Length: 631
Image: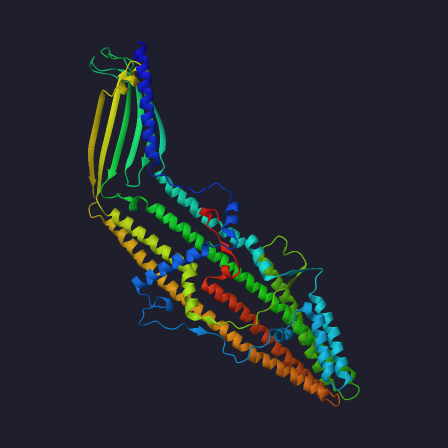
C-alpha cells in the first residue's frame, strides 16, 4: 500500500515536471528581447540627446552602402561623382565665391559694430576724423554726435544683462525646447508599439471554471432528471512565428446525477489536452506572422528620424534667431549714430536760422531727424522682439519672457570664404537627410504590407492535431492518478479548408497595397529631388552672399571716404553744406545697413547649407543617441 502511494507521488511529480518543461519550451520558442516601456520618459529623453559619439560614422557607412545598391538597381536620374561608372565619371565640382580679394574681418566688423563696442568704436572714428578734418567744427560736431548717440543707445539697456554665445543658446535649447521635449515622446511611443506587436507571441495562461445544474423531465428510467456539473481547466496557449496555435491544458470535471445505474456518483474526470493548429496557406510563414513586428520596428526608426529632423529644425531656428538678434543690435548701433548726426545737423540749422538758414531748411532738417528717430524707436522694438524670439526657441526657465533682461550675443559674425565640393555636398545630403531615410523605411513598410496582403489572397487550409490523456475516479486524486497511468489516450487529426467565392476583398486589399508601395517609391524619388534642389540652392546662396561682401565693403569705404573728403575740404559752413554733409552721412549709413544684411545672410546661409545636407547636428557637436542601446 505504501509502495503504491509512493508510486503515485512520483508519477504526479514526473507529470508536473513534464508539463512545466513543455510549457517553458513553448513559452521560450518565440520570446524576444523587450524594451523597457515603464521607464521614465525624462530618462529616455536624456539618453536621446548626448554628446558626440563614434556611432555616426558606422551609421553613415551603412547608409552609403544602401545608397549605392539603390543607385545600381533603380538607376536614379541623379548621378554623383562617387556612384558613376568609369566612362561617365566626372571631376568634383569645386565651387566657391568668385572674389579677387578677401577683405579683413576686422575691417568689416568695424563698420557694423555691436552696441557693447560703442565706446571703442566711437573713439576710433573720432581719432580718424581728428586726423583728417581741417576745422575744429567737424571734430566738435562729431563729439556732439557721440554724446547723443550714447544717449540713444541707453534705450537698449536693461537692468540685467546676460552674455550668451551661440553654443550656449544651442545647449539650452536642446535641454529645454518644448518642441524637442514633445517630439522626444515619439520614439518612446513607437518602441512601446513594437513591444505591443511582439507581445502577440507571448504565452497566455488561462484558467476557466463553469458550473451547470440541470433539473429536467425524462421519459425513461435510463435517463437522469437532475445533474450537477462542475468543470475546472487551466493551461497555456501560444502563437508561434510560423502561425501555429499551440495549447496545453489540464481540466477536471465533477458530475453528480440521480441516475440509479451510475457506477461512480459523483464521478471525477481528469483530462490532459495538447492541441496544435498550423495554417498551410493563408497565415503561414514567418514573414506573414512577424509582419506587424517588422512594421513596428520600421516605425521606431521612422520616429527616431522624425525626432532627429525636428531637433535639426530647432537648431536652425535657434541659429537664425541668434543671428537676427546680432543683426538687430548692430543695426540699432548704426542707426543710433545716424539719428544723432541728423540731430546735430538740425541743431546747427537752428543756430544758423538767424543768419542764412531759411525756415524751410530748418524744418527739412528737423523732419529728417524725427523720421530717423522713428526708425530708431522701431529698431529698438525689433531688438526686443529678437530677444523674445531667441528666448522662445530656447524655452529656458532661466530666461523667462516676463523678465526684463538684455541678451548680449558674444558670437562674432563669420566673414571668411568657404570653398565647397558641390557633388560631395549633395552626396552627403543623400547620406544624412532624415527625409530620405524615412522614405526608404516607408517603402520597406509598404513592401511588408504587400507581402501580407498577397498571403491573405490564398485559401484557408489548416491542419489540426489534438492529443488527449484521460482518467476517471471517485475523487479528484484517484481521477488524476488514473490519468497519469497514460491508459486512456485518444487523438484527432483534422483538415479545415475555406475560400471566399470571388475572393474580392483580399484581391482589392492586394491592389491597394501594391499601389501604396508604388506611391511610396514615387515619394522617395521626390524626396531625392527636393534634397538635391535644397543643397544646390543653399550652395548658391552661400557663394552669392559672400561675393556681395567685397563690393559692398567697397561701397562703405567709398561712402566713408566721400564724407571724410567733403569734411576735410570744407571752407565755410552753410545750410547747403550741412545738407550735403547730411546726405553723405545718410549714404554711409545705408551702405553699412546693406553690408550688415549681406553678412548676416551669409552666416545664416552657412547654417542653411548644413541643414540641407543633414549635418547640422554634427556641425554643432550634437548627436541623437540610440535608446535601445542606452547611448
